[in-house]
Image (cartoon, rainbow, N blue to C red; front, side, top):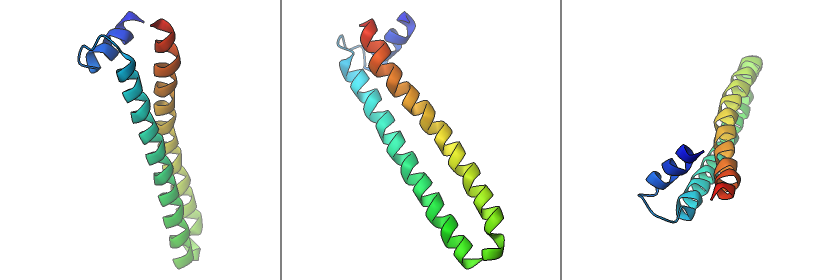
Length: 94
């Protein structure tokens, strides 16, 4: 746990108060989550557009859309996990 705190302090540039580092990590994770939401929305809209143009390829397009959305959700899950760790676990350790 001390390694994690020291890495947050190192990321903050050696600042004695790590709250700015925690704030930055939380903001960065929030941006990742918003970006993932926009990415999934873009995948969905393009898939519906593609199915409207070529209805016979709808099954393959749908499967590709689900796989891509699942990969984006995996990255979003890790960003959310980092956000929770930085806010709750490190905050309690300080």
